Length: 104
Ligand code: HEC
Image 1: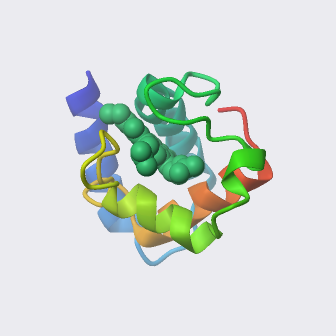
Image 2 (image 1 turned 90 degrees about the vertical axis):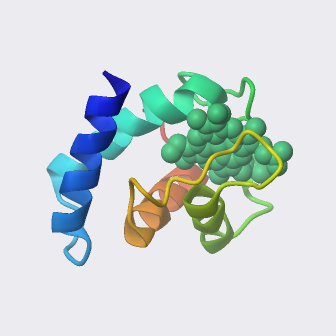
């Protein structure tokens, strides 16, 4: 199931890399956030194995730094790199939304 989603994301990523993030893709990114990121950061991002992805603790980072963390992961920690699945533009979109506060 997870594999199927990731493969789908990979295929879709290559078609949306340069375009604005479509409403459909935004829905997929929200799904990714809830199901994949949520498996470590908590379904409502309140924290779990990974830290809470709530606006307050994230204020110490810029959106660019958060996007880098999402794309490249944190070596030496369980935070994996998401580069194979999302574009830099999409990572920025997620980072900005996380800083603003979203409930996926
Ligand atoms: C396998 C578990 C795991 C998954 C899946 C995961 N993360 Fe993480 N993430 C972590 C851990 C653990 C850390 C803390 C790393 C550290 O110690 O600095 C982290 C850190 C982060 C941080 C930095 C937060 C901070 O305050 O320093 C962000 C942002 C983040 N993750 C976003 C995401 C996003 C977005 C996804 C989904 C695309 C995701 N993570 C999926 C485990 C995970």
